[in-house]
Picture 1 (cartoon, rainbow, N blue to C red):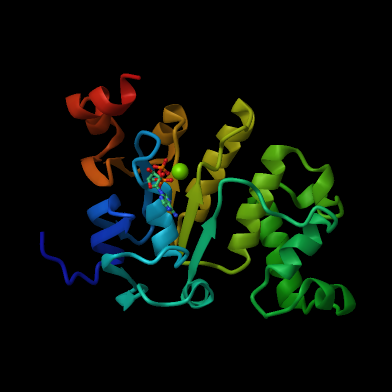
Picture 2 (picture 1 turned 45 degrees about the vertical axis):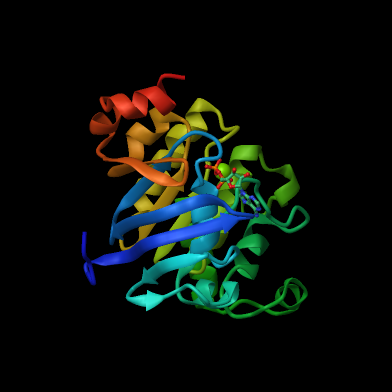
Length: 249
Ligand code: ADP
Ligand code: MG
């Protein structure tokens, strides 16, 4: 498939990375459009996290291209990739436990303010407005004065998503965002993601198939660093190869 395509927000082509000769990701092509919510599934070790690591600049590919809004990300530093509009959430939440929800969101506003700096200055009205909007999106508007340490595991995960939303990324990448969440929290997270998917694209790695079926527009199945199959949830669920290597287990 050829594509010098500008319709996609993210175009990954022939992406490869070797760790000591082992190809964790092998010739991957992946195209994600604006307003799209893409889920990547696959067995452990398939290379899912490594794909996100390469997009956000944490791992340098051995070969291939990652174009975001037609701009090559390969070779850029992590902070430049963030500035280009890419937000990435890791598997474990990393919020500031001793700051309130409000302060956690405030320090995440992209103005290069440090944690210490933020406590010393009043936020401008536009920052406060964004904090309130994001807090509402992540179901924490009643909890703005609560310290991070007192949030439930699920609320911490939402807060971290909110911290990314403060930067208004055009590409949001989340690695297993509902791991450890209750059924009710998973439902709310699905609602949250569908809502914030507008005007950006989201890539989610997830194992919980019920959750995947709620949110995914398209599902990409990764196996041994390659795409095994790509399609809608029902296409994936009925694909014999996918059942054999993943869903059947
Ligand atoms: P997944 O997220 O699909 O479970 P990963 O992307 O974490 O899989 O890992 C894919 C493969 O690459 C695994 O075999 C893993 O051990 C290997 N791997 C990932 N990162 C590194 C690294 N930095 N150095 C060496 N091997 C790695
Ligand atoms: Mg992983």
